[in-house]
Length: 250
Image (cartoon, rainbow, N blue to C red; front, top):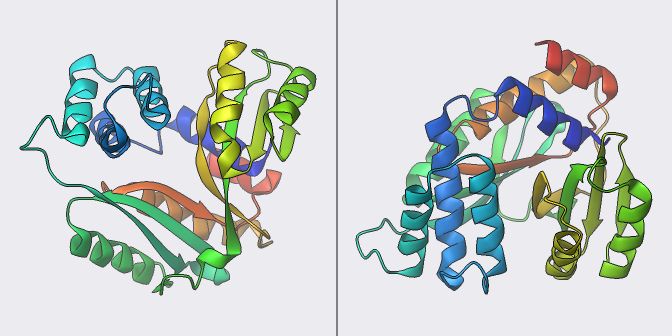
């Protein structure tokens, strides 16, 4: 299993990603609201369908989901105007970090994220200064018990994927952005519900640092993830088995 997938599993077990359920629902609602701008029908809006599926998997109340869809589609005229924002920066030990946000106050979010970087001894960078180190990819992960690596490999190749990773308990599929819907539909046809599915930023080259240094970087990542306006955080640090074991024990 790759470092990303293992870390995601650890966070789910520990509840570190969203210590408060309300914070998780806020993130999910914003994701639905943004997706619903392209139409409020999950059957015809694929991004919205994925966002709603993710919310249901986390037991988000139906009323919350419907309100978020109405805000995004324009039915709720009183809803806050959210925008997507990607911020870039450097964390400890030269680590490259990308922060994807959804906010109703751009200046507040930029100020808060800059403060979190500075507090950690890092700094926020200009647009493009860090982003060139990442590629945007379609990403899916699911338990191998629902679909074996061999079958997933065959399915993914036909659907246009770039890579399929055998992680033992989990299978990961990577592909170009334009193959996202094709891969997702192929998984849906064989009744596979991904634990994670979305467009992710993948580091072109991973940074190898010590376990202690990795832990310092991950403290910054966790602080950023805890901010209400932050949806996802990506980095280029190689997550070794030793570092993951230390994170799980922390």
